[in-house]
Structure formats: C-alpha cells, structure tokens
Image (tube, rainbow, N blue to C red; front, side, top):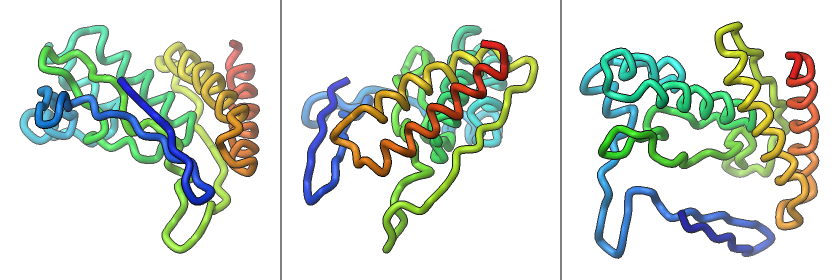
Length: 177
C-alpha cells in the first residue's frame, strides 16, 4: 500500500491508498465483515466475535480467525474506537484484507473542539485470549513508541502516546510477558 503525509495549517494528515482500488476506475473485490454478517450470520459487529461464525462454516481459514482477533486486540490497545464490522474486510479468496482505518480514533478532535482528554483503559485478556492479547499489546507498544518519537506529531499527542505506551508495557509485564 502506498501512503503519504501532508502538513497543512499546523496539522499533519496521513493518507493511505484504498486497498480496493487500482488505477483511475478499477476496483478489487473485497467483502466486509458487515456484508458477511448481513447476508449470512447476523453477527454483532464485534470483530473478535465476528471471526468465529465464518470460521465455523469454513468461509475463512483456520488461520484467519486468530488474525482478526489479534487485529482487534491491537486496535483496542491503540485506542481505536472505530472498529465496526464495515472496517474489516476480506479479499476475493476470503483471506483477510490489509487493515484500514486502524488509528487511535478515541482521540479524534470533536466538532468545535480540539483534543478532549481521554484515558486509555484496555481490558485485560480472558485466559483463552492471553497469547493473542500479549502479541497485540507488544505491537501496540512499538506503534505508540513510534508515534511518541515522530516530530511531525504534536508534542501534546506524543505525550498521550508515551503515556499509553507506558501503560501498555506495564499491562504486558503484569501478564507475565
């Protein structure tokens, strides 16, 4: 995937080319979890729960359901509050499409306001989720440390990323690395 960043009027914007487009008018086939749920399963929209139904009926491979759960844990650890079932998709062969809209939306500026103070409070894993949660939490710490060190990002938000990285690291240590 191709990406680029822009700076304009004191803000930094990050743009990623859509995974379902090629050329000026071309489209690749993708199917969102939302569409699968609507057509076949009547799922909840929760990624982790939504991974189970297509897995049980062999729509997706045995490897794909754990990938979805890992991605869901990672999203929660980086404060992504926009992980509805329309933001998870599959390629034509039902492999998981590359992640998109994976960013800390909990901190998105609200209309008419700048950043509203919010605190990350990730849930600890259930026993059967521990391994996946640990991998996701460690990846989240790496991501947050990169945000913390990126000079293009405001110092205020880099401090938020630093605090979230420290919290996530403590949670990983508490789970026994």
